[in-house]
Image 1: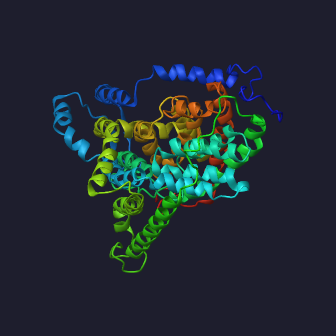
Image 2 (image 1 turned 45 degrees about the vertical axis):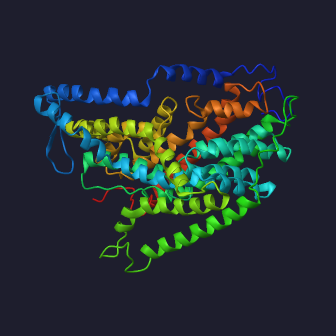
Image 3 (image 1 turned 90 degrees about the vertical axis):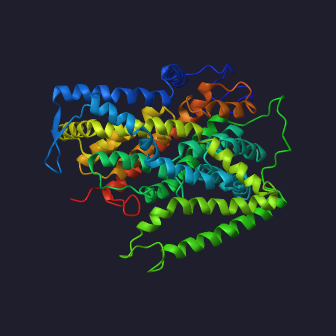
Length: 523
């Protein structure tokens, strides 16, 4: 890649400054056009929900059966289009929704995260984290900050990505490189983190529902991938750091501000004095709360241990504890910075958070019906057993299987951005299939998360992709879609390869994916 400087008006890799996409850009434009033909995730679930009863009737009439490898019993398709099936679908619709595993988990977790975000605590903490890092560590800090920003759901996109450009421009580096590093951490490293985020219980809920198609007694905890994703944080930071400084920034060359460019002194990067004091108090309060939580489950005989000393009570209480650990610093920060002046402000912030979950609630209603129908019909179990038979006969080993799941989820992610929508559709097939082969649901979920994260940054169908493009056009006015994709593609490739290698090494060494989360099912 060229090391020479380019005029500011010319995007990287485009000497004519016309922002014409190259081969990669043309391919991604084609993906965008095809993706626009696909319906919204909600409509996808409606179509799938409607298709399951029809498919169940066809499968039942055809006499499709399989032998369960564990029980030895014959598994047959159940017709949902007869009188009994239709009555069941109508009379259980409300119960399917209210008992949907991810529903309560996500809403409770979002209460805490939403208050911390809307009080300004999470945004200030991110700004403070990045602002105090020495210049040589700036790139790594941006990527790490992006990964950690997933605690705040969408805050990283609107706070950290433009901040990355500002920080790089302020130290004489190309702002698009800073924007790319932050974007890679926020979106490409979406599944990695140092703590449990709202994504973990969300995916675990779908994984549990899918696992019950094969084994109703199996339970996946929100911490099922914690060890693996904890290690993934270091991997993503290292890979993002390398790609930024060895590939992306040299290709971009030296940046010269355009005539239309002007700094915005009204948007300081570092928190002000009031925010710094509030952050210190908020982190102190969070530390005290965390210490109390540790005392609730670590000592022998602690409140959140069961009679045998196990941690199941702690796991059951994890979501409300997580909410509290966000609410406390959010409250302290909001009171000290006066974003929270009275109790009504807390109520408003929590209400706004729940209002923002409206789309998820609608999706959850339809998804809950689809999952229920799929379970009743036995189609998921039959497909899983048939798929397992095909994989066994093909001789495909565990590594090709894991790589196949990563490739599949990454490809689907180009067209369907929602992680919950994708996993809600894929889990009922992939999880039982993996279980039929002896692999744990947590392993299937980990492979899915890799593919789901690594192609976020190269698909124009990501809801924030147009916003990222607009951020970049402040520094490169004629920045085009193809150019932005060409900047982000090295991150996607590097993350995919490095993450897949980590999963293979992890599997080969037999390390658990999380507390009590094995790679293989007990024999």
